Image (cartoon, rainbow, N blue to C red; front, side, top):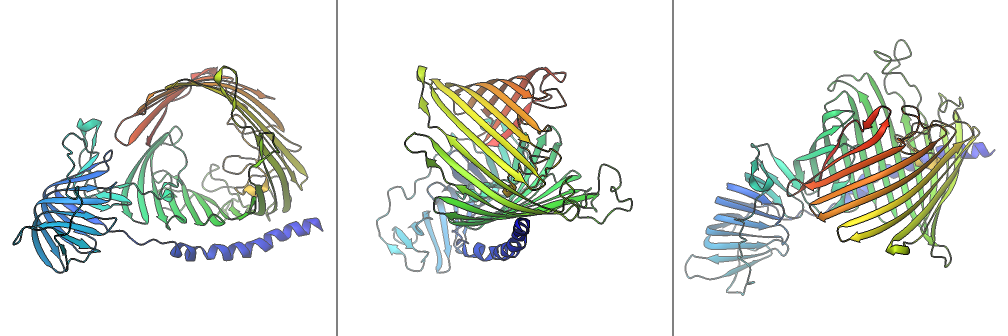
Amino acid sequence: MVDDVRRLIVRALLPFMFVVASSTPVYAAEAAQPASLRLDVSATRVAYYTDLQMVGAKGNVLVKLSNGVQLRGDSAIVNLSLRRFVIAGHVTLTTASGQYHGAAFAEFLAFRRSYFIPLDGVPDRWTFLNDDYATPEKGREMPGDAFSLADLNGSAPFVVGNRVEIDPENYVQFFPSRFIFFNGTLQMPPLPTYVRNFSANQNFAVNSLSGATFDLPYGIAASPASLETLHFRYDQQKKTYGAFEHHSVYGQTGYTVFSLNPATQPAKQWNLLTYVGSSQNAISLNAQLFTYQYGLNEPLSSSAFVDVQQTRALTGSSLRIDVTQSYGSLLAPPQNGLYYHDPAHPYTPNHPIVAGIGWSGYDKALFRSGLSFRLLSGVAAIHDGRGIGSTGQKDGWSEYFGGLMYTPVYRAPLGTGAYASYQFQRTWLSFPNHVGWQTLIATDSKQLSPRWSLTLSYLLQSVSTARLQSLFASPNGATGLASQPGSPNGLPLLGGVPSVYPSVDNETWQLVSAWTPSTNFQFTAAAQANHYGPVQQPNIAGPPRYVLGGDLRTRISKTLFVDVGRSYQFNWGGHAWSPAFVLQVSAQ
């Protein structure tokens, strides 16, 4: 009876989630925002100064506004932070109402207010309100800095070209582009169009790409609500490769992100992320397709999963409905029934579906103790006609309960700041099986000087299960198990490595020293000791016993930082040093 009720979760939730997901485009359209006034600037030289948030143009300047107005002059400055621009020197203003000649023209984009000094006839000063160029307000007093031109002679630009499209609230796009590094000492050859997105909309920053030690984004197209970006990447496994990412945003309430990573190697990962919602109700979609294919030829293997979630805020807690459909193989069964082309591409017929509900409480104070806590629980039903994992059962369910407790930062002896947290969770499976894990963290930090700090931390982790073979891994978080792709078997990673024994413990001590002499430079050194059980051996189980590491972060351009790091592992697995340096380039 109980099992029948739990299995009904799948049947009840699937049509509900289909209806909810189908309504997503409606919410997205409602969230669209009107476009702002945009500029198209061409000149003998157009330069973008990222530190000043300005664009400067000199020589035969032509400015086209998206409202149809055109201006010509000798030089122009676009101030992106103040949302205004000025064009000066032999100015010609062309509007639907006529053409005027003058000394300077200024546009305050945020207020749709324009200022003009005409030279036709008697010198005067004109003000145009709300894009009405037919009836200027003549003789009206103007702001004292209306025609102020910033002096850019002592500044080095980040990128230069001959034409730029500017959306003052979102991006600049150069046609073509030439980058300038190290304060002008290194100039790159001309490259195709380049987009620099600086929108305040946080949805443009949503990342769908898996981690890489080096990632250099290169924007190629943009609009107020979209961004296309190429990525030049490197990591120790894939080496050098390229990727593509697309963003569409729906105001501040939602986004869709599509990516292909890597795009230049056979083992490809296609990602689709969608989110639409508010502070009270939100819907998200996470779909991933994994293929092994040369170019866009027929794949040698193909697997995927689709995860749909709806999160609803309640009084003092939240509720999440989570449905996941996984596909072990999307290709027709191979003739040998085992693999495609070679054993490296096995045939996996499993198509499990998981549907669950998770509840999470908000952080609460534990009476007047100064401690805070949070509780969570959930239930899920699993069905796979080919059998769930290695259990051989087609249907199953899981239930979990857990919590988190943490302290405030206490003022400890010697002027340090101490903090601790404890987290636990217990999951019951119908196979039958159960999983329990807990994590204890304690830290003590000291600011030795304005530029130097020390942090001592202690980490204790443990996980146990009654039957290692009666587990499964799914991207669905409502199962109470560690989710894919981070975990291969449903158990959480301890010490950064998969748990391959029924009972695993890991104890870590770490001392971190951070020195930051300026905002352009930081050096971090760390010493770490790991004690992992029941077995801690190279290439079998557990992290290195002792590690000394260092990381240097420094600015290499006006907008880019480079991180270089490496660790000494005391001959763990025959390696005195980590196999390679960690190199990561990121924006400030």
